Amino acid sequence: MKIGTVREVSHAARDWLRKVRKAGRDVFMIDRAIAAIRRLPVVISLGAVRHAPRGCRMKIFRGAIHSLSTPAPAEPVEVCEINSLTDFDSGFARLAAMLGHAGRRPSPGELEFLNSIARRRTSYPGNIGPSDYLFLTAFVSILAPQRVVEIGTLTGFSAGIIAAALARQHGSGASCVDTIDINVECIIDRTRLSGFEIPETFPELAPLVRLHVPRNATFVLQIAKRDELEVTFIDADHRHPLPLLDLLRVAPCVRSGGWIVLHDIQLGTITRKAIEAGRNVGWEAVYGAQWLFDHWPFRKISGGNIGAVQLPHEKSALIPFALRMMSIQFETVEKYARATRRALYESLGALC
Image (cartoon, rainbow, N blue to C red; front, side, top):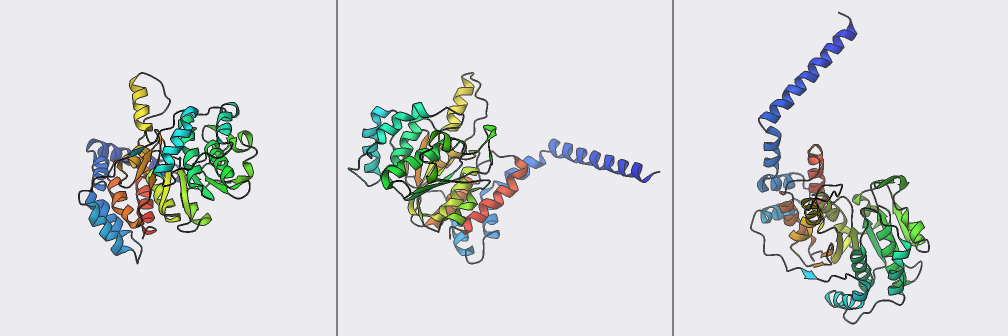
């Protein structure tokens, strides 16, 4: 028998064995059973301790033990929705009081800029809607940080909104937005680059926005110091547990008591209701951002489909919360679950 023929027979036998093994695993639901075991709180806690870096093991061990106990009741969510331009002034005042800046008013030109958005923008799937960017504008304007980091650029529309709010507070050139996306090409239009709306819709603000692609949230540690940031914005992959992973990766660079704004905190429910109503939405309901916001045990403010969560003063308090969230079934592809789980474990060490 020729060598080529032997190789073909060998490969065919190997492929057949793989199919038999896969069929056996499917029949006996082995993969499903393994996935269920990996979601057990005790297994997750042991994994966290095993992957803990030296010098952090005791703190992570204590967090793991704490994660096995019944969590304390979460703080009630505060609500401040700004649904139209006519509500902006009153919504801004309410949000300012919530954030400890009672009496602060919108910057000169803020309403005029927001009113111009309808003329400026083209609506793209995944972009933040009017009530979302009104809340985001107010939030950034009230806290007025020198710099904001965004995870998930897409077209760049939200980066432009943030840059505009910062420019009105600090003037051109005195502030910046760093926006990070894992894709070079925009996922809603592969013929265009991520962030293409920044120069097209906000040309006067383009110098204030720094685009970083292809990068993920780990890149924040390369462009920001620990405890430097006051506000970050996460609007990337919404499948659980990826919003949690993004939050844990940026948390070391956010100061204690700082804020992380999350988009699509009602996406799963909105999508499910649309599907149940018979509408073809073009994607499945995913709940990662929604679960992250709903389960957040510390202070949080809802603006509708956008909201902000405040970091605790002791960031290691995030460890038991994160481990509890890891027991919720992942919405990502199962073959990437091990790598995602490991990345979550590794991100805990930076919180110590």
